[in-house]
Structure formats: structure tokens, C-alpha cells
Length: 244
Image (cartoon, rainbow, N blue to C red; front, side):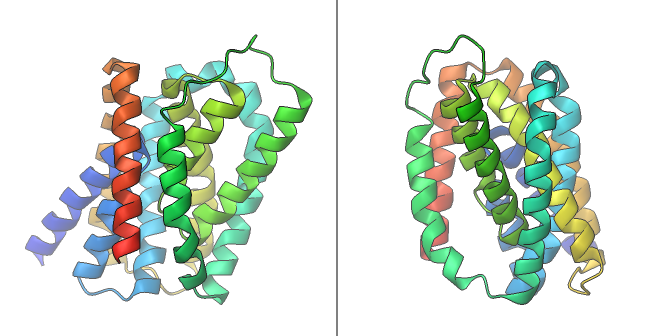
């Protein structure tokens, strides 16, 4: 039991670092839950609850980066919130298999798109771009509540390319938006009966530690290298999903 708890703690730290730095936390946490004996549905639900603590740590750690975008985040957050609820309800009532077919290819696209130079911008967000990004934020919320793996890297790309943000700022905003979707989904999952708490607790502790540490690494890392790491991480996650 102690060995399993330590294993999950380490997996959580890796998920926290992976999620806050490159948006790929599930590649560490989800397989760990399967390895300790959870079935796919319970693993997915328990994983979503635990990953909420990645977001808590990452949001605290990346506050200097997302705070200047507070007004924009407040406009986008409701769509992500509603999407997270819809995604959680979908997960509890429908199978995940159909989504698994599409997601790896979206991840490959988003991983390559990270490397594309962002368009220059005056700093103003046009109404057309805002509406589109808000709609996408809702879709991401649905996906995050439903399955989650890869939602971080896709969110980073959307924010970078559509809002012309630096990757460090996009990372920080992603932490908050994904945190909202994960959080609202976790509340729904708590009452579902599918959360394995003895497994979730050590994983969640590790997720918080990794999530809190990740933004410190991002802040000190060269933006070029951060893009490369994010792209490679997304491709690794896409490969993992294709081979599962």
C-alpha cells in the first residue's frame, strides 16, 4: 500500500510538471491509474479529479503571467465552465471510444502549430476573434470534462495563434481555463461513485507539487526551447494515444 502511494505520488509530480509546462499531464497520471488496477472509466474520472490539483498549483505559480489578461479570462471563463459541465455529463452517460479516434490527430496538428510563428498584433482583441476564441474555449471545456488528455497543448495553440500571445502567457492562461473545466467536472465526478479516493489522494498531492513547480520552470525557460518541448510532448502524447 505504501509502495502504491509512493508510485502515485511520483506519477502525480510528473503529471503536474507535464501539465503545467507542456499540457500533457494525463500521459503520466492516466496510465498510472490503470497500472494500479482501475478500469478505464474509473481511471478517467479519478484522473480528472486529481488533475484539478495541477491547475490549482499552476494557477498560483503562474499568476504574474495571467494576471495582466484577467479581463479577457473573465470573458472566456463562462464558456469553459459550461463546457466542463457538459463534458462531465457526457462522460458519465456515453463511451469515450469515438473521441479517442480523433484526438491523436488533433494533437499532432496542435503540436506542429505551436512552432508556427504567431501573428503580430496591436494587443487589441477584435470582436470576431473574441467570439471565435470563446466558442473554442467552450469546446475545450467539453473535451476537458469528457476525456482531457491533450486539452492543455491544444489550448496553448489556440491562445497563441488566435490571440497572438507569447507561449508563456498562453501557458498561464491555459492553466486557469483548464482548471475551471477540470474543477467543475471534478465536482460532478465526486458524486458519481467512480472516484477511488485512496488512489486519488496521493496522486492529487503529487499533481499539486508538480503543478506549483512547473510555472517556475516555464518562467526561466527560453521561449524557443519551451515551444520545442511543448511540440515534442504533444507528439509523444499523440503517439501514446494512437498505440493504446
